[in-house]
Image (cartoon, rainbow, N blue to C red; front, side):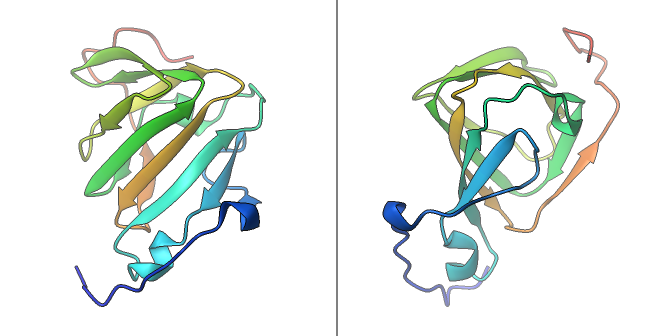
Amino acid sequence: MSRDWKFTHNHASDAIWTPGLREIFEYRDLGIKESTNGDYIAHIVSSKGESNSDEVQKWHVHHCDFQFVMVLSGWAEFEYEGEGVHRLEKGDVINQRPGIKHREIGCSADFQVLEIVAPADFKTEVVDAPDDAVQAAE
């Protein structure tokens, strides 16, 4: 990891929301990817209030070294390999270990999270359900 990171101040009043990994969400980049030279990304992921299904509701993994998620509003239910179903609510935090198979079961129309991931340019891969899946994928 490089340490020639730059100082950044991302103003909420200047927030730009863009499409991202999921069509039902919009994303606000917090400037961390640029300031850490791609070592990390931090963004706020906010539901657009839509409920159409997408690839993230299938079992998948993120190819990353670190993934921190803090729920800012609303709720979501995820199923995790070896961990079962978890309902994440406002104020909840998870450290999603690298390579864990997981899927979203559902989320509220006001679901919003702060997510920090390393490295910034991580890949997501759809995978088969683990043997211990509690609920069948839709």
